[in-house]
Each structure stands twice: as structure tokens, then as C-alpha cells.
Image 1 (tube, rainbow, N blue to C red):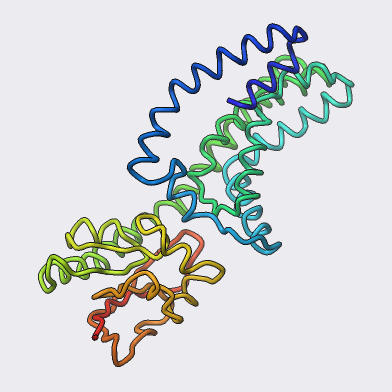
Image 2 (image 1 turned 90 degrees about the vertical axis):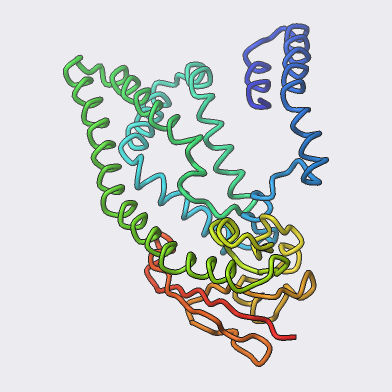
Length: 313
């Protein structure tokens, strides 16, 4: 919304028209957004989604920024390399023609793409592919725009232009099909197996062997909470924002070893996720069940283990 107002201000030279449009737009935008902000503030305590807080890294570091930038680059290059290549060539062709006005008028949606990428980078958001879905369609569209600019600059005949367009679309389709078949489907199958063979038994054990008032600390809340019916506290801060503060400045593994969660609650049971089974075992933390979870993430091939502990007081 803000970018649209800025774009209108650049294109329209009449200050009165700019102020009038901005005022009307802000009123309409506020009418749509304000009810949600009020509801979220009363129900959740803040209009800022817990997911944003949980998925971001508050402290700045070069390593984290490089990690986020690398994740974004890998996702885009593994799905949109043909469109990106043609788009870049189209931009070069436009700049070679010194068509600055044309460029300014036509590439505004790309500013939204860059703004989204920079926002994730500045907030240290741990990016996964679905976070870029607001941007990837625009990259595909501007791939077609790039074909048009290449045709104009090199004065290509229609059959060469059509061939370039078809080649870009076919390569994009083939690339996405290969990535989906070779990486996504195996991961989905392994993830489903992990949910069924690892987390489900733990959830049913909690349901059948604990009291309804029992509290459980876990890094993953969905299936465990749905099946067990117990009260869950999550280390990521999605439903327990206080945990984000408790684990501030350190990793999940370090926080669990140091028992940072103790400043928020003393759970009756703990479900821990680690590359080492039963790593937290102690006289006051008794392992109940350990299961391996295959394919926890697309880019993670190492085995991951979940261990259910009973806290002894």
C-alpha cells in the first residue's frame, strides 16, 4: 500500500491530486485494516503476528544475513532461473536504450519484490519457499516483460521472439517439475512417515498416561497438541511468546541444555528435538520414549530424534 502511494506521487505532478488520492486511500485502507488491528490487540495482545516474532532473529550478525540471503537465492534460482535470466537481459536491453522513463513506468511491481526480499533480510527471517510466494508470480510475469524488451532492443522477428518465450516457459515448467519430483515429494513422504511413526505415538502416550492438567514443553505443537489434548508450551514462541525472550541470543540446542525454559515454566513433560537421542537425560528428566524423525527438512539429511521426557520434581 505504501509503495503504491509513493509510485503515484512520482507519476502525478499535481500536489493537490496526490494529497486527495492519498487521503481517500488511507481512509479506505484504515477501514479494512483497523478492525483486525483492534481484534488482534485485544485477543493476542499485539497486532504483530507471533509467527513473525518466532521466525525472526532479533540480533544482527553478518552470518545470519548471509544465511537468509543464501536461502532466498537458492529458492529463487531453483524455481525461476529462466525467468530471472530473461528479466535481467530485458533490464540490460532497456538500460542500453537509455529508456529510463519507460523503465520507471513499467518496473514498479519489481520494487515490491525487492522490498519483500530486503524486509526478510533486515528482519533476519528464516525464509522457506512459501514465504516467497508473494514474489515469484511477479518474477514470472516480468520474465515475459524481459522477452518483450529483448525483442525491441535486438529487433527480433516474431518467430524468434515466440521461440524465446516458449523456451523460457518450458524451462521453467521442467525445472519446477524436476525440483518437485526430486526434492519436494520425497520430503513430503518422509515427513508424513515421521509424523506417523514419531510424533503420533508420543501424542497418544501423553493422552493415555497423563492428567488433563499436565503441561508439555515442545519445539513443535501442531500434531502433539491436536492428538494429546494437553496444554502445550512451545520453545519457538508461536503460542508462548515468553519463550522467545527466554531463548533470546542463543540457539534452541543451547537453550535446552541451559534450561532457559525454567524462567517461564516448569513443565511436567518435555519433548526435545535433537541430532542426539536422549541428550537431556538426567535424574530429574527421565526419558520415556525416543523416535527418529526422517526428512525433517528438505535440506537436512542428518537424522533427527525426538525424545519424550518426564520431569521429576
